[in-house]
Image 1: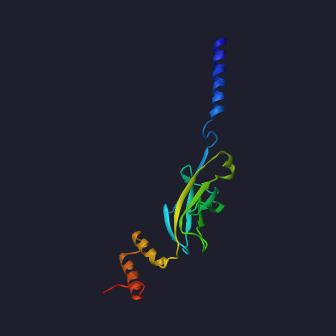
Image 2: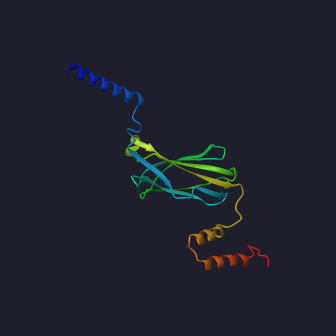
Image 3: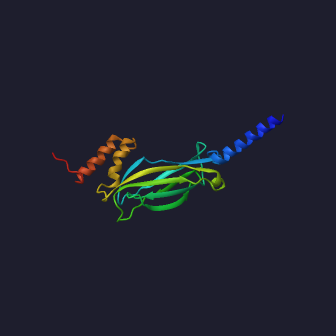
Length: 181
């Protein structure tokens, strides 16, 4: 009987030492919330364009409100140019503008959004991130937003082919687009 007790004690000590030495991965990380971007993976942006980054926060396959999000935007050189926090709204959604100053360089900007979880779960949270790249052209676009959008709307079946052709005819009539005879 004494040898069984000694074996159990040694096994218990070995188990405690292994846990102390190696830990249990994510033992306390029971709350995992993930920011989900509702935008394309990549954008092309011209200085002066209006652009909003949108998404929602997923927790247990559903959107969740009041989740603190850390947002970092890095320029093409890798330097963080914007670092701020925001909170998901009552529907679990978030939105913020992507804005550049006149002197900002062209290139690829990295937007990183990290879930910091709800306040009550912050100590037992696994921080998940979402990232997207926004390509910035060095000059302001000469094509108005509505002109670029008519092709997107047509591709999404938001406007009919007839409406697309009417918009193109307007551009030709106004000599915005020159068509050789």
